[in-house]
Image (tube, rainbow, N blue to C red; front, side, top):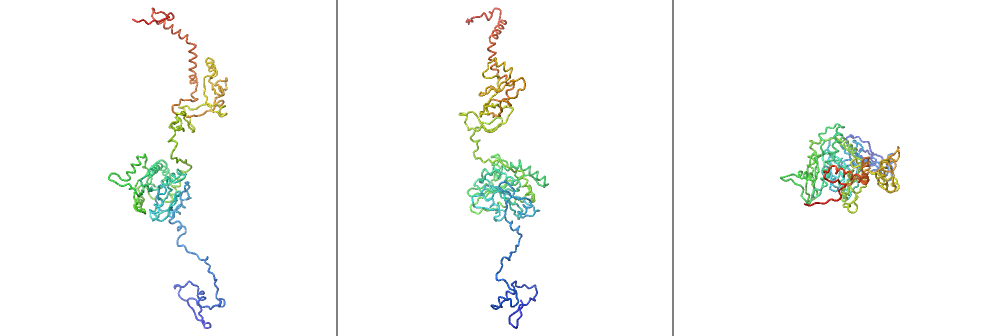
Length: 532
């Protein structure tokens, strides 16, 4: 700063700087310096012709400078919701997906997802494997699950998209929908980690992986092949992801390698014993550790995961856009309402094992009901089978009155005599008789214009055919079978009328073939048994 002395006032006066601009100057206003240091009390600035300054500092005019991009600074080391618990995709496009991951659109990435039961530390494991322990995926000490749906984050050091999933065995009403969502995430993953902290390997681990392998082979493999063909992707194969089982214990020893078999061999043997197949997965690796003192060490698991990620023999890195398009295609294809079936003790454990021969429906009565109620029953509708002809007639009038009376065609009514019924059957055809309404239908009641019984007198009903039950179908009542239905009555009539002529004819034939010295049968009155 430069000042000159005023001879009249003997006070310094500020002069413009004459030094080089390269020399740094104070950012303080020289007027402030002059005002604070050299002006007497009571002397105003206006007398010297200098501008006045406000007495209050306006802090609202101060702004801070951001040293990084706002979008990138907000998303760094933060996960985002990719799919919610109702299988709704929360990312609208591949561009938004790439933006949330903070990854270059031309990058080549692999996908790692983690599965396991709720509370086994899946989010904590991903944070330590890929993000140095930073809480990228939220963790919680509460009883409620902190991960609902599918969450994603990107690790630039390994070029890996990490997907955190909702835990199995959680308290939810959408268990089947959640399982289907997990299988869709598994299908797009290159490496999956099944995390468990149980002291011994539970059955749900084998059930989940075995069911996932079967679902991948039956449904997802063909869908992925179709997606690859449409996108002209040069995929090396359609084998499933590599599976890493992370087993951490405290009081028990994990599986170890022996001279006979490895931990992976032991696991494959257990899968076979449970009739489960894991051939859809490209590899199976077991990482077991016993943690006596916390915290958990993830070095061995991280080395295994990095080794699988560097292996490109089966799965090669893909673009983030292709990963998102594949997930979206699978989510659109395998979506919709599903039946929730979470019964621990299904009815099959306690109901009668008898099943309908026509439709296969089980009897809904309890086991051993034959002693009190021998009839089987089922509320499900049956289907018609020509082999069993399981259709019957219900009286239409009684049905309208609230009664279900089963009727069937007969040769004659119950109150007709034998001779008259034969003549009437030959003239008027078969009859349908109801116990309440009497005769409700005659097949040849008129010379012409006779309608079928279904249109006038009865309604049809398809019924179950239980084991040991004889055919009771209406279709059995064709013309030949209706005649056979009256064979018993006709036989009785013919036998009573033709008994004497038949006996006389038999005696005459016997006399014709008998020797001449035999007496004719009509002359024989008594027969003696002669003993020699």
